[in-house]
Length: 307
Image (cartoon, rainbow, N blue to C red):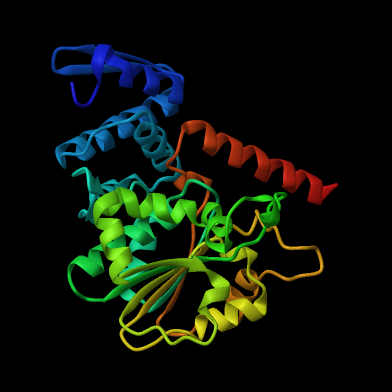
């Protein structure tokens, strides 16, 4: 049941992935179709069995990802997907890496002081960084979690929003609030916020500060200027860790401005204790359509460059 799903729904997904016919009779599975496709489907089933044996549930997204690993010849690394839990959410759900890219991203954060996580929407860049920040906070490795992002408008105007400055910037910080709510629960989040253990603020508020004993996350970093990025990176204090996330295909800066994220990854490449991880559309863990949308846009942009 765990492997094939209710009413053999997982078998149907595998048949669609490899264009084969799969028949399950008792302990035997028969795969018929193109010999090469049948061999790939057999490897995918073996990979899914290894995944199930580690106690992991199989979803449509899991089948799609493991199928792509089989095609790429990386299915020998499937057990790395069922790695240790990063953090337990407020609802008791374990947070784990769902792709090899996410596994590399988590390992980079654990082993470096500064990490750049670059990739398209839905790859878990911010969510996993927040999970690791909460883990470090619960283990008393740090005293504060600081989340920040540049308040750059993406077609909307801050001035048109009602309320004071905090009310105006809250919509920009909402994704960070959502991740913290999921990890800590609304009550604990509010308690730590009032105590100053958690700080969520626009990037402009970071100027002139030194951040000790902190886990700092800069989200939407593609919308920083080179000056803002340098300012942020030089805030790092004693016993602190910084994670910078962004998607260089979604830059909302005016045309004349360079992206601080793009420049920083070139300037800081090769420096010890700084990790740079690039996630791809294969690491998208939102709805299956998000992966298709990202892939379609990448194809469209590549064709535009060729023309």
